[in-house]
Image (cartoon, rainbow, N blue to C red; front, side):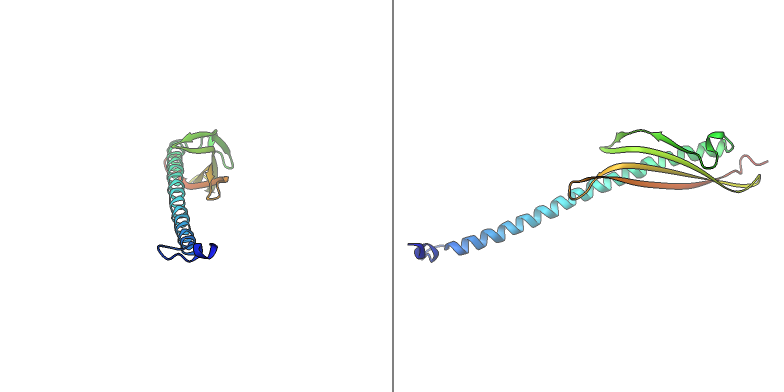
Length: 148
């Protein structure tokens, strides 16, 4: 009876059915893996765009402030401030935002302040683990408006 089951006269026998199911399952798993990778890639790029926009907005805000008030004690060389606590922007959880000031050049004519804004955020990897990520932008502002 068992040999009759393995070698069918009509239709497919058991080894053929098992092999076709194995091939079908392999194809489905591969397609699901590609789909999940694509969804995670879109989420990562959305997070990158959100973080980049937040960095650029903050850099622009501090650039304007330093440009028009270059010698403000808040912007002294080596100062670093935490300017934002944890918040969610477009489904991206920003842990904290920092701004740092560094001055170079000679006084009084050729001074340059470097403004560095750093954002830390949570990012979920392919494995499903949440990790802390960091991105920084730096710009330089000259003191040409304050020099007379």
